[in-house]
Image (tube, rainbow, N blue to C red; front, side, top):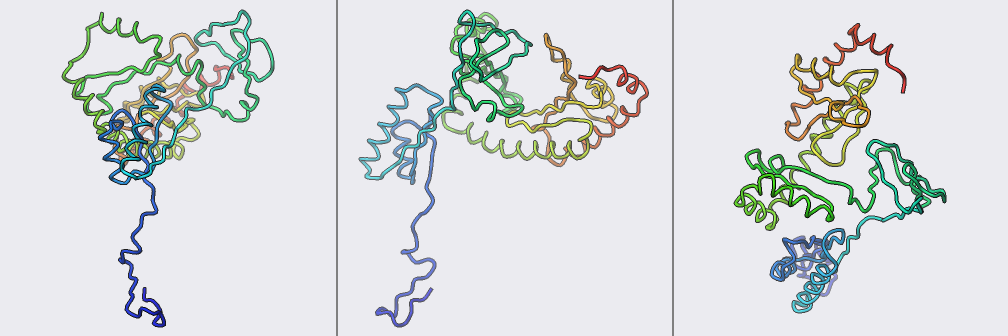
Length: 331
């Protein structure tokens, strides 16, 4: 833009590329983790323009976080470049009330009620001290007990990276670490140490995190495509909820449809699905389809759902199925 000619300096031209207009409004936030907590890496990040260092307090030990904070402060002071520290705290921890005998054992498959009433708890009743729990928890929300130390997550890296990598992992409670290590050693000691070393370096250098970020965008698009198409084509036959993690979703059948019957009939239409009712051990099975979306291109999902819809339509007209519906008790 041109300054008014009445200005004392008539030759002053403030164009869009003028140096006076070049200042950064956007702040750069970076997470400081195991791969970026060294003094050398922190210094490099600050010199590249880091404004805010995020520290995830849900993981790691307090002394590790304190050491990282001191490192950031020292390097920031030496460089005379201020850096804010953002502490990302873990979610709220809700305390339970008192129990009969001070402790209870929860059994697999049992129905447990969580109440905000001031009662004494037992095997099927857990008193909670947070009065707004009922108002803030929705259907299908996950509630973790004992800080989540009752959950074991097992997976493989051949899906996250490439099929030829025969390397798995387990996220387990600390109390079970030694028994798991001992059991793993007795089975076959360990997989290739070379593969483990390469993957560990791949993670430490930040490549795995970058790969996961790219894949999340891709998988989210494929998940949304599958959920949208299922609701459009099979909304009256399946109940579908979009998962917020993983590579599969669960579609519960309606109208008395059998997931095993859909599996058998699907093969004739070129559709492979996994019936969830076969995966139950102790609890009563529910009819549902386990559908994967991460290994399929987005443009192939809609035609596959079309074939699945034809499969279910064929089953719906089966006289045998009509008889099963009449005999099935209402839940």
